[in-house]
Image (spheres, rainbow, N blue to C red):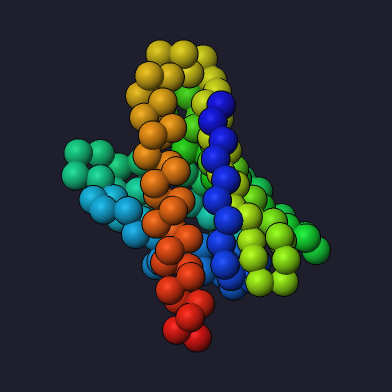
Length: 139
């Protein structure tokens, strides 16, 4: 399991709305397609130059103080879960937390590959926060 948090200078409702719009997901060379609205059961396809990965939105929680989503990515004999949480820090600040969990019978053999995300996830989250803050100023 791996977890990382970053703080964003934007209200939670704006941050959540920005993140749940898959058109805003910018992580070249990957491209993303969601087969419907951002809700439980919708399927997400991640296309990379050498492979296509399939995920499903397992959980979406819209609470009074936080929003959360869990996206499960199917791997050979394992599931990589991305648990995102967006928490109010104040009226104009949000903490984004991403927790990654690898489970299933083949999880141990995929652990080294999955550990790469421990290095790339923090940078990706910083890029996400920068994009949210830029878009917040534009509104």
